[in-house]
Length: 420
Image (cartoon, rainbow, N blue to C red; front, side, top):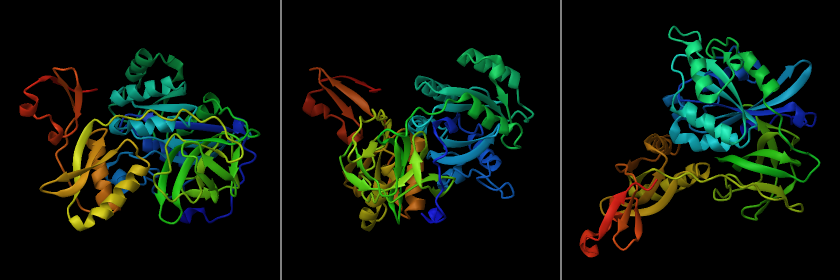
């Protein structure tokens, strides 16, 4: 909250025609965070004199591992052909374990930059992210990065992308995010090719909550996409999912820290603070509207299914409540983690957590230890299995302790299989 003390910014002049909302999607290590840094430098959001490295990667674990874990947002102001634009960049992770972050980020976008390493070419997450964007009807701009590297083969990769995704040969943009070569052309293509949001500021407020985080001083910070209407300090709003009412105490944009604005309008992306104290109140995919003007809610997001399960216990049993609070705060904006109480004869009280993959699990553990200063013991990860009995009933087994007792069942197990 320390970033938002300056004079409020007026965004009233930026109607939907002047707004572009986009994300950068890429396989891990293809240069997505570096490209985001260069775009922020070009638009003056961050200084070119300073050594900028992964500005949007704010978590310590992100900087240490060189990966993006949490989707972040940055608003930029850019002028082209005499017209000023408000460009909102929603940064996304590249690793498959964090694909849920990508899907909810794309919900706030109208287009995306598909970034591909000119040496490595198409990789697994390139394909997965392309079809995720394609399925949501987003405009996709193909960009080849690292073309200045000795091993770069832009012609080969362009043919590869043409074959896989049917991009026209003349649509590719070749850049070097590290040196900044041709990076401004990315902004020009975003303005020219990505459609503006469709919305009407004269209609009642209809906003989509697509991310949130916890601030020690303000409580829950909600990141929203304003589809219709506007929102400002003092507005009485309601969650369509919970029916809980709030009064807005602050609105603003991320640039890249929190910058207060007088209001947010249709088509724009920003945050609001509303004295939301409970971490269980911010449902990703929720619709917020004015109390006196209810609207039809959005469909929300499809919940991801955990693929890996592990037991988590405090190293010191006296830290149980501290660890519980830390888990609650981390799962506030990562609903892909499932949490259930578990008791171990050896380790005492703990939790059985479900993750999207082993990296997801390891990052969660590292964040608990580094951000919340609590030492944990995590059991060997297991995958769930579906046990089918001879009488036709099925049982989902998430831990060895849940496995059916063969003696009690009289060995009436027909088959054991992976459920997904």
